[in-house]
Length: 183
Ligand code: NI
Image (tube, rainbow, N blue to C red):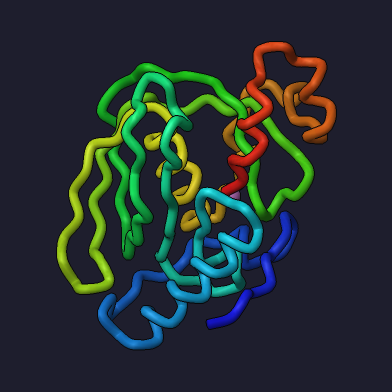
């Protein structure tokens, strides 16, 4: 296990599409996921994509802590998605604050689909097929965007709402707990 260095916005590995994992059950993929988990915990993130640790492969991990999403209160346990595909299930979009471990110290208001389906393969090679709503859907879209070389500022429609995290205090609608949402 190791804590890996996190790539920051501007690094080429964050700007290009990642490659499919040929064998999701390979020992090196399991090792990568272990290291990503340790890195995410160390950085207090809720999610991490392999390109963020300089590995251009289609692997993401995330979880949704209990109580993070009032409308969808059940937590989502740590999820490891290999070769995920996200499909929107609604045209409804909600704008909310996001942070990213690759864009440290900043937050932005990002529109995301409120309901998606994602399909992927697990570390055991088993299919994963889930419907996600609310914050769960937001995290899945954020992480999977990393696999296509997209960072959250590229999804914003109002860049005046891209700001340093300590300036969120001027936005009364923001729950201070939401600072811990870097992904
Ligand atoms: Ni991110």
